[in-house]
Length: 113
Length: 113
Image 1 (cartoon, chains in turn blue, red):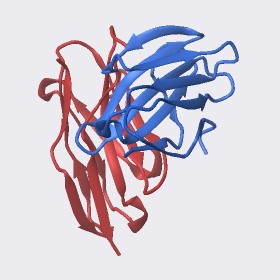
Image 2 (cartoon, chains in turn orange, red):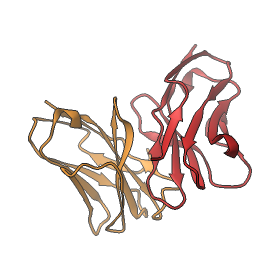
Image 3 (tube, chains in turn yellow, orange):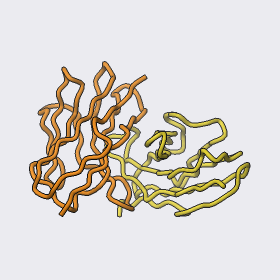
């Protein structure tokens, strides 16, 4: 157990819908990172938040957005869902603003039908 | 754009065989290098990391990796694999001046008992 929690574990939804994935970092970690893992794209960095502020952006679509709340948990919002958004979404956390040692959560499996 | 390649998609070995998984990256500046492992049904875990200093890095579970700067490589090795090493292995690169964390496509290792 890494100490990073993600909910829900599984999510099945239809195209065009909007979903919210939640992540709670390890106690004391200020950074949260979001990744998407799919069969065709592999593991891709989406976005990082550090202490409530966006710190880095990767291959995140405009339909996706994230935020980090004062209690440091983070939410990833995915809207206008497409079949190709079906993937495993991981969150990771680290102490500082550099991803030197990230701890990954168990992931949320999103299936878009 | 920076990228990380892993030489093999799927490696099959018998127990006690030696393992070497290749990883090459395309980034000219200074980087931090990582190997992560994902056991079946589990989250990603850090195996080892290289920041600077001795290019031979030892990690958990008997794994080690060697950074060869001239070859832009960071190969993972283990002298004698066990059935429990069956997993997917990801090489990752983090440029010092950037935040993006780039993962390789992964190598699936199957160890036959």
